[in-house]
Figure (tube, rainbow, N blue to C red):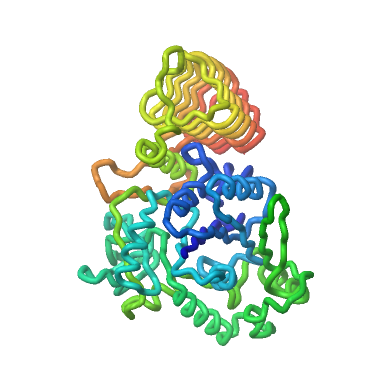
Length: 467
């Protein structure tokens, strides 16, 4: 029996993803036509023996997330549940806090996947490696060039045994060209080091005035607590019960550290566990040469969409549009939602994703872009390297264009650079983003700009953020 845990973070994360994350939680943003974390769930559902998929994060369970969970359960015929943290607990704190939920049913092992990564998810290969040589922690690793490796967790391995000898998160100098992919396979024993970190944090006095058994005895608290909610589903009904801190302590948490939790519950897998246990025979790495990229910004989401669309050739050819008589001209990999209306004279691709209810007019040219739910591109518009937000309209003969920040195609180990909006006080050229319900007039140029939601423009803009 196997389980999977997807770490989806919370609204305090994903700030580089704005303004797109204003409308939907970042994990639900459509990449290659489906929500970002659906790619993770699809990969987990294909692993033989998978019994349950858990999402852990700090998002409020709104309507969009609830509908996604219900649809995922029906599509994959697997329990998919969301466990809401009472506060942001880091990459390892949620695993420890919900350890009883994870270990229920005595799984052989459980996968842990960060939501903001794009990958072909070689989970079966990781499981085979784990069963050949069982250890508490197995990390998925890939390679990066020397300069870009400094932006990731770096792994020094034993080439013969693949044991992780040294681990440094975002080092200041070159350590290794092997980087952490944010995809793991843990055995149940992996939760013991998390317990040790939790207890050490308590001893260090990072939780002043708080009883040491809050987390250990959280089952004893009444249903009146609102610290950590577990959502379970029976048929069409949702049952929510609470775990964690009593109400009396919540005020102290909010007063001392609004929006964050500085105490024993916060555990960072990378710094607190991987760095500490490296070289002790507990952590191993499985290397992959498949596709992989982080999704930290809108530009990286566009690049991830390209990777997933290319992978659809093998995994989901039915999702790719084909050129048909009387239909639009398709170049390369293109996803078109069945409800979208596309004029036959439009030219689409490569690497285009068109969402639900989108209208594409005559003579439109669309390339390397994502067009979201309900948007309209009027006649003869040109959209290149851009994301058009929900319900936005681009007028006739307008041009919306961005500048890609793709990895160096001549370097097979190159990765997406960590994007910064500004340099020397100037907005760097990047993809153009139109927020929700933006209106672009006819015959204007929007170049390398970010337009916040609900704006109605009247002229051209270049290299600007339009507030």
